[in-house]
Length: 236
Length: 291
Image (tube, rainbow over all chains, first blue to last red; front, side, top):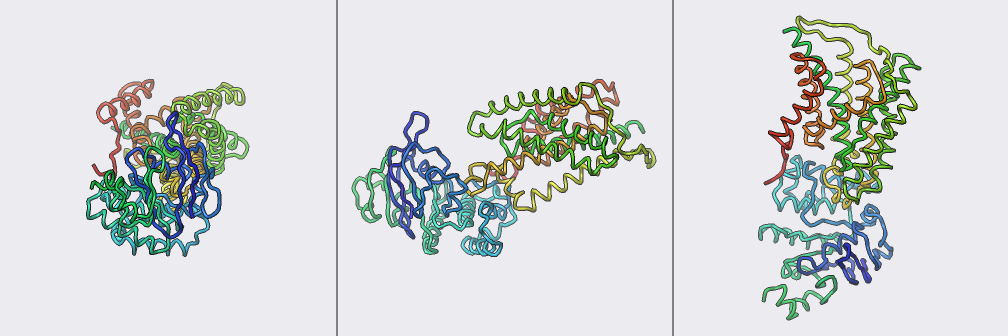
């Protein structure tokens, strides 16, 4: 579904991503692992068109999206749930959810209503807080809101950037259960995590990013069994 | 006592105009994320547009509002194209200096086109005074208050009840996230900027009617008043900026009650400095933010 070939991104003189290639097959959860500064978030940002690319191609559903404008990429069906959630703090929860549908003119009123209902079933806690402003939610609720806002775009693929960051373990488990349910809804998931063991537990396939290059790849079973991965990321 | 009350009413009325300027200003700053120093000239051109409409079409306030709004909208488009569009990824002072330069250009163009003299504004609203006990208020002041409240209400409905309004607020809160949810940020920023400018234009018209004069350099003080009101309100909060404008208007007029009208601007800016010394964030409280 998503194919990245030889992607390169520079920040000034620094090469943040140095020629990575990987694929995300439809209906799977693929995870990108790696330490801080390995280039995970930059990869996502370049997929959604938010950073300049120095080279390489990104294709989605057979379409070249390398130089597309961010809003066009969203319309093709890629939702990006950013690191640190980045919800709109003084919009209400309802308005935050509505923003997910703003860019896409193809969504009918009826479909928007359906999407909203879907999210409120998936995230019942948001229903209780529809009228509250986003900034007043707890961290976990904000993360759920960010994911729900992503799903409001009716995407084919959703990219989650460190959804577990700064959350209590019990909330993290809840979020990971939700990610599995999102795959069951037929959506493709590209997941970035520092919490490698949890990510590999739900992912189908994984890539390990080190200093802007893909170091190891394999199915999650293979990665879980890999000695290097165990040592560096699973703390074994 | 009567004198003080009537000065208070003058202050509220003038404050309402400042509030409208500040509303426009904070919409612009919020949605583009950049500080503008062209707002005064945008307002000045709005005032001139209404001046000519009144000259040709007579006492038609509604037409004047439309004309000033439209003229400032168009100037706003030019400001956006020249001063913001290319500089979204540049350091912020670049576009700031660009707006300063563009304001000089507009001011001098206006002097060439409309002359450097003060043009007398026609009497759009007949001079009728209503009194309620010690309170005296004239028709002009009532009309100004009505126009300001009507515009503020329309803007508030637009921002809170329509999808375009939600997009506008989203862009002004979190640009990156707005990109990520598929909002066409540049188009929204352009529209928002133009709406802010249009509102400023109407404020310029009201200012010209209130002082019954219209001239090319009137933007300077107006721009400073709009800026100060907006700073009082924490720059991007529309409601608090309006409150800031109202405060400045009242302080000014109460100040000159006890001294001379020459000190009008001094009172406004001293008040601003005092507030900022005590509360640097202005009236703003971080709403909804968790510590």
